[in-house]
Image (tube, rainbow, N blue to C red; front, side):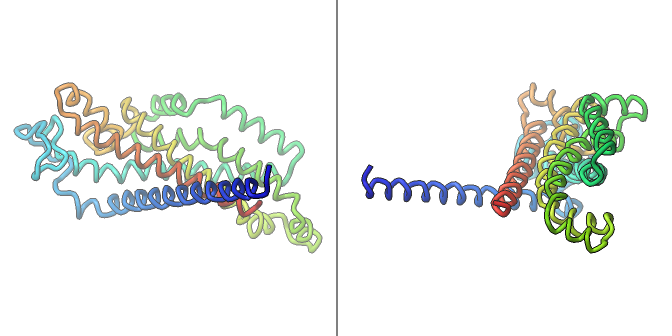
Length: 290
């Protein structure tokens, strides 16, 4: 292979990496814009929604797309766009509760397991493995059977189901961080384990935990939407994207796809955006550590 050929191959590899990074940056920015718009819509729902999301008008049932109803109406004559806008509140708040609860408990278990080691690590690892044996959806159905359907029951169930994912991720990165030189130096200086973990270890593993959190947010949104679709989550007439997809099935058969299609598309966009953001954060962390 000549020197010119080797140089051309190196140049081609550099350009390929640059293109991949550029595409990754573009997708990350697009994901952040989509998520920012979703949060903004949820906050400004009372201002920007053109109609009351629960206003029933049987005369206007299954209206097609028009200037009066940009996404048409459902079988009860309710404006689909208004319900999608208001549904952003519950559809984002539910996964936020799942991720917040599972992250707090999972980080505590993961850090404690990595720091203490020994029998503590063994017991906590067995507990995590037991929790992995319970599918989140089935656990949610069990809790709903006990406490009744609703957002609170499903959020509680999925938060418990997501704890092992956060705990396993936290434990794996905390184990590596536990062996770092700065931790041993702080221990030699007499700093307590609590201060070392709170002031140094946890902040250093936070980026990877944040990446896992972003991915779990998307998964939690899918699970909550699925539970609402099955009737275990948010109950009608409250606007929720998963419940809207379920309610729009009959309209879909009658030739009006918007009541089911609109919330479904929004769910897909939001979940993909969270996945892209999580992968971007994880990739940046890997590059930094490399």
